[in-house]
Image 1: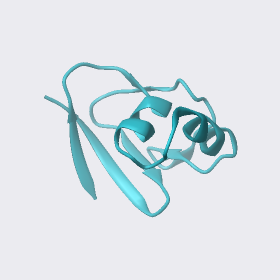
Image 2: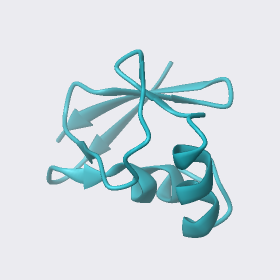
Image 3: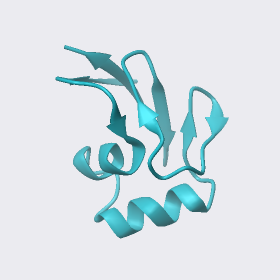
Length: 70
């Protein structure tokens, strides 16, 4: 599991996927989220602008990211 540190919370799920280079663009982030390919804390998440905070775990495409507030 990869850990990332965000300077302020929350961060939107689609922006997190884009900034961490799990997808090539914001449009692709929105698509994979709406298709149910992303999990947050073990649950399928389809809200593109879901607020991610420290302690959340995001899973997509065999990547698992633990979000920490720093």
